[in-house]
Length: 478
Image (cartoon, rainbow, N blue to C red; front, side, top):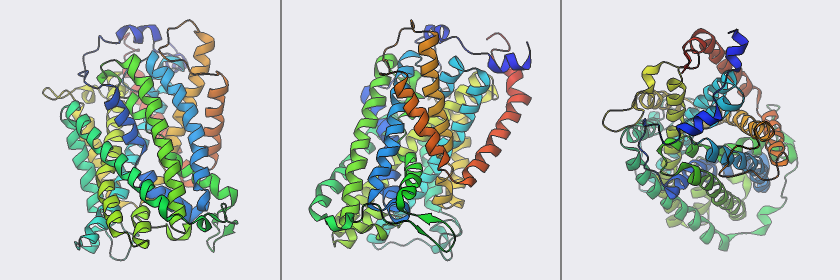
């Protein structure tokens, strides 16, 4: 078999469907609402509590709601395509597995390799945002941590390492090593606390909205002394490319397909439920936040809490900070779970060492990749500023969205007779919308994102050519 043939070999969808229910690597313990909670947990988090305010201040002004709408359209189109695949191929690995079945081994490897990095970096971004709210809550209670431990170098005078951000990633990785249902129950409780906090922000804040804060909706374009432009429609688009990070996350629940009790029924429902609930919350919070505080005041580590402090509502600010402290843990849980399951799938297929595809003998979880990712994300969260990490997290997921939308379109033409628990409506219109918006958002990402992405892809290609192509289970007839 030639190298090109090996790169294009793919798994049979019929074989994957036939294996559903027969795999025994994981224990099937997750129901519809636990899966939905994982999705909401992955979506609602730093976007509401941090990025909405920061992007309003830096790029979009009150039009940050438009940025969320733009990002939401791309995400919704991709979600419909994810739902079709989740019901058709309910196997651990999400976009990686779907790409393997339709586009071939090399495309699948690259998207799995990219998502591995993106999910890990998302964990780091959220941990840094979580640290900001922990420190805000501690300050409100009169507790101060040493200056050197408050943030990464470059984020403030005397800052060296973000200790709190680092510790929380290690804590979540430890939680994920134990039984999946334990973590899922904890996650569902945390999501409930987070949703209650968002409802509080909307319910109290709506009474303090000043419509004058929404004027102008899109501030005039300005260029800073550093040559970087802000505001105008270009700023709205730039903000959309950043907050897009906040409107996906439902894809993480599809990585837990083999831990779902009824995956073909529940995975598509959970994908659509989690995105619908989350988008409604994002739009409402964006309106309220830019209505209670002028957008120029929102570039802080904890903008929602600080906006309520500005209104003199200290109790609301403290409640939001404490809720964010709990709520953001669910984002860490969702993306760490997604990263470890993708790593496990890559290893089980032979593209990474099989040593990582062994579950814990007692807890039934992929503990080895969980430990490695926990240490890696702890170092990134401790050493880098949030804005530098946030710039890097979208490109792999946008690429995955393009793969998913393209695959649905191709498969509808290639194998229209395949049984589908959920069918994406208006094919090829919906996939084309997902592809088009994803490409546009990719074009809005800064150059540094592309440079890091290309370095990571190059490393991935080297690993595949030197190891994966020879050790793939398909190479050995598996």
